[in-house]
Every structure is written in C-alpha cells, then in structure tokens.
Length: 434
Image (cartoon, rainbow, N blue to C red; front, side, top):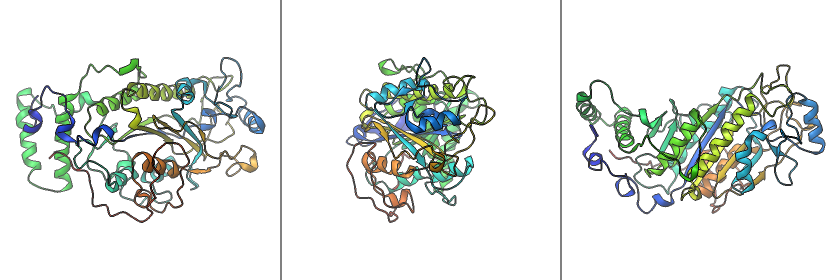
C-alpha cells in the first residue's frame, strides 16, 4: 500500500478491526441505518394496489390501462388478509413481508402542497417541510445530537454516488463514493503517489478549517478503503444483487458494513420513478418500465438483507421513501402525473412486519384535491420511531425542528424513549482518525 499514514500502514494485510478505529464494546451492537430514496415520485398506488372493496372499483375506473390484475399470471401478490397486494414484480419483497421482516406504511408524506420534485425532496431531506433554509440535513443533525455514539468512528456515514445527499448536508465526515474500487488518489506515475499523499497531508495539517479537516478525512478514508477493499467480494448466503448500478451500490454498502469501521448511516438513491408516460406495457400495469424498477428495488433489498443476515440484520434498519406519489387517474400516455400521498418501506431484523398507517380511501371525496392519495402519516413519524427505537436518539426537536406529538406507529421494535422536542445542545460530533 502506497502513501498511508503510519497508523494505517502498520495494519497492511490485516483486516481493519474494532481495536483500531471504533469502540470494541459498542461496534458489535451498533445500529446501522440505510436510507434509500426513490427519486422521481414512485407510483405507490400500483406498487401496493387495492384488491377489493369500493376502492378496487375506483382504482379500475381510474386506471383501465395501468391496473394490476387480481388473478392470473400478472396478479398482485396478496398481503395476508388486507385488501391490498404488492406489485407482482416485487416478489422478493413479498417473501420478506411474509417472514415478518418488512413493514409497509401507506399514505405517507408531508402535508405541504407541492408537486415540485426539487422542493419536496429538499423539504424531506432537510427534515423541515415547508422550509428550505436549513443548512443541515436530518441525518446530519441525528449524528450531531445522538449521545450514544462511539467517540471515534472513521466512517460514521457513507453516501453512495457522486454527490452528498441533502439529508447529510453539513456533515464533513461523510464519505461519498460511487465505487470503492475507484475510491483512491492514484493520479500520475506510480512513483509519485507516496510523495503526493505526504505533501497533501502536510498541507492539510497547516490549518484547522473545515477545508483542512475535510481534506484529512478524505485522505484517511481513501487509505482505509484502498487497504481493505476486496474486488473479489462474494456476498454471503447466496445473495445475488441486481446487475446494475443500484445492485452494485447495495453490495458496496454491505461490504463497507462488514469492515466494521463504525458505519452508522448509508444513503443510496434509486431514480427513474417519474413515470409520466409509458409506465407499463399495453394491457395492464404488471409489466414494462415500472415493473422493471419495482423488481430492481425488490431484488436489491432482498439481496442486501440476505447478504447481511449473518449477524448484522438484528442491528440493521433499511428505510425506503419517495418525495410524493402519483395521481390516481392515469393519463393519456399510459403514465401517471405528480400526486401527493406516498409510502414508506421499513426492512429490518427488528421490523414489526405488516401493513401500517391509516388508509384514506380512493373515493373522489377522500382524495387530496379530489385527485391524489391523501397523506395520513407524516413521514417524520416513521423516521422518528426508527431514531428512538433503533438508533436510541430521542432528540426530535433537533433532528426534525417543529415536529410535535410523536407517537410510535409500530413499525420496529425497541425501547420507547421520551421524545425531546427542544433543540438539543449539539456539542457532540463524532471524531475521526486524524
């Protein structure tokens, strides 16, 4: 290994372990939250279609060319005794639902009236619906306010992709990468690299500004990932990830978790859900573009869970969300336009599986603005339950300023700490190896 700091270089050839960077007592029990954002606004009415009652009739009238059948080879997958099903392409998730590992929350979102992707995503990721002035994301404020984190974590948060998501804005310790194999500083001739890194470390050591600290963190992160990344990684338990960028990123997250570097948070995006046209093949909504996306999501989540089901899933929580849903009525281009109510998926070894949330109904008088699925569960209620019951952080006033009257919905198991609605004194910030 070229150019590493002496503390890291001394461990070359060995598996990075808890004694080096994290608390030996806390790391084996440390909770891990993976947040997956479905960008573009997922059509949740077809992801979880009604199968019976009056709402089935409203659904069939509104979507004659997009509906998911209730029988035959393209039929929705039933969710127990509930009058709803899963899209047939989400068979992998259906298996997890039947095993009690998947909680589905219907009609989630914000009460703000916006159909702008950019506004809705900013509101949700900042954790301040209706206000985009915050300089930090909700995940950043969680890390800053949690009182139960190890004092030293080399990689507290990981953002898969080229950009740090808004939910982690303001956090200078987030490692952002598209691929661990290319996460390096290998520029110029090989013989230059050691001198380059030494020079960069000396330059960044000259100050203590955010720029200097971020530079040191980037060098440390590159050293550690290069030293431990195995391009021949084999998922455990026979897990097979989708052969696309989403599958690659999920696999990379699993590999980073198994390095045990104190990882608390990871974010992944799956885009392409803005289905204004050609959402499905002709005939019904069971095949085509949306079905391919649903299968990618379903197979990817199932592979990640299976890969980590060797001592990690009992401290793993995966939360899936989207900025809003789609309109009930299909348009003339075999698509759906921007709507309101959405869904959230919570996958965990500690999930309270099943269908959650209050279903508002699809009659015109029950729809939001007489067109869209209404929101009955504030998305912050679901995330707050994860923060309190799984992450052990009750500082809701800091993480979600202005949010009040939290009560657990019952999507995950865990201790119910009393929520703190006043802003926390955020004196704690996780430190990195410097």
